[in-house]
Structures are given as C-alpha cells and as structure tokens.
Length: 389
Image 1 (cartoon, one colour):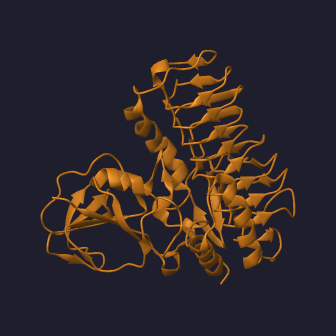
Image 2: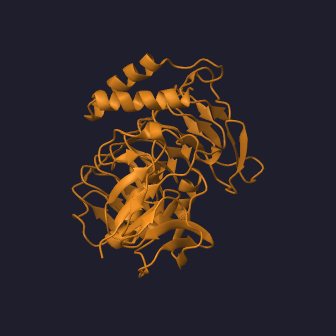
Image 3: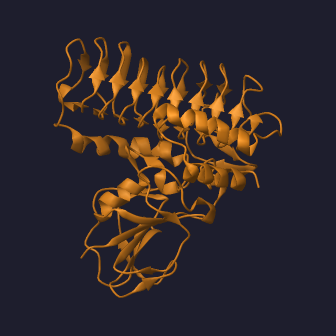
C-alpha cells in the first residue's frame, strides 16, 4: 500500500527560535539529512505537503514541497512531526488508525484507507518507532552525535579514488568522494567515522577533515581543521569548525573558531568571527530565547544563527547565543545572548527596513546562482513582516 506523507510543524515556541516562523522546521538538518528527508526514507514516499504557519505558504526554496496551512487528510497517509528525526525504515504499520510513538512521545499519525485526519488522535493505536525527538534547535547539535556517523556508514564503499598527495589517517575505505576536487595536502582522518563529500565539493590544500563529516554538493572547504559536522550544500567554510550544522548557502570563508553551532541558510560570518561553545564553569548551557530561558542540558553549545544573519569582522559570540533571522550585527565586538531578528547593529532596538533586507537578498542570492523572482521576494517579505510584527 502506497502512503501519502505529510509533515506537521508545531506551533511557534521559544525552543525553535531563530527558525520558528522563518522556515518550515522539517527543513532543518538532523545528522546528514534534513528532517523531511529522514521521514521520506522512513515512509518510502516523497512529502506531499508541509503544514506550517499560514505566512509560510508558498515558501520559496528549491526542492521544498508545497508549504500550506494544515487541512484534513484522507488516507492512506502518514502525518509526521517536523520535530522528530526518524531512524531507518518504518516497521509494519497497522491497517487501522495509529500513532507513531518514540519513548512515550507521539511523533506521527497514520490514516487508514478511506479514513480521514483533522488533528491529533490520542486514542489511536500506538506503534513504537526509533529516532530522535527534537525539543528545540539546539537538538540539531545533539543529533550530530546521535545520528551523523550512522547516516554515513551506509554510504561507504562507493567512491572515486582518493587523489595522490592526500594523507589518510585511519581507514581509507571510509573516505567517500563523489566527483569532489581535492588539492594535494588535504588530510582525511576517519578514526572516529566516515567522511563523505558530495558532487562538486572542493577541498583546498591545508584542510584537515575529521569524520564523521558530510559536505553537500558544491561546498568549498578552504582550509583548517573541520570535524564532526554536516555542511552544505553550496557553503564556503574555512578555519576551525567542530560539531556544526550548516543548512546550506552559508559563508564562513575566513579564520575563526565556530563550534557546536547551527548556521542557517544565507548566513555570512565576517572574518575573525569566533564562537564560544563551553562555559568557564563547565556547566550546562542555557539559552535566552527572546526573554525565555531554555535549559538545553548540553555541555557544549555555541550559536544558533537564523537564515540571512550576518556578523561583522571580529565578532565574538558567547556560549549559547541566538542571532535572529536577517540580523546584521556590527555594533560591538561581542554580541548579547539574544539578537532580535532583522536587528540593525544588534545591541540597540533599531531594525533593518523591509526594503533594505530585500535589497540585500537580491544581491546575495544570485551570487550562488539563485534567482530572486517575485515568489521569492513575496516569501521573504512575509517572513520579515511576521518576525517584526
């Protein structure tokens, strides 16, 4: 039986800042794959629709299924939570209505043929599944430790030859190159896990890659130690990077340590931008999400940077910092713990104008061969309006 897959975003809450209301949460990366991609593998079907906030309808990003407001669903179908990262394939599913449950938490619903679904059904038959429940954006960092290595192991074995002049520490068979260009002098360390470089990835001399590591198509790795991260596609990364999630189309093209961080699309980190990812007390990291304190339980956590955020040269980002979508930070060397979306400067109350934000996007996106058409402008404009309401 072929199932239709729908994904359901939660209502906005502080734990999902700086991406709540900015992008469908199914488009966040958990391990090497987007949450949406994990559900598609789990169910064995492409996503038909993502149910999200009304202003995200028409979300303009290549490859993303239609994003619309929630509506009634006819079976046979699965409605998966965007805050759950499944592992592997779904078990045998019953013919009647069911709930998908992970360690006592409902993470999805099943609709039988001829049935319908209009919202959560706590009485439905529970079916236990494996995966990682995401309680907030910070859990995308936790997912690297939980999911990344296992995501990459099935990819080992199908690779182009490792170029001469490369140094391999560990098992050379755990290096997977798919039409990647590697300059002499690159180091691959697979001691802790595989390294997978997708089509079009460039690795410059002086880069040390430490697995588990995944780099998406057309990413440029420009030098320095880069470890235990999921990067791309279409990113530029240089300098020390550790345990980071890059959603794609982001620039960290200069030196400066960035660790245990989530970097949204179209982020640009100015030269010398540095994150702290460990408190001096070695205690768990708390987040300030627009005035709400979030206990992450993580010992290591750097910065959560929303889409289109930008930092000036020499910016210092303290442990557990949140930089809102579209924020342009340049007021001071060190950011506060929370920078509001579309902040202009970052330490005061000034906001970037709507037209100013769109003009910057119109300059930036074509640099990665992404056109800014009317649908894109309208989508970005609705995000701006929602975040600054």
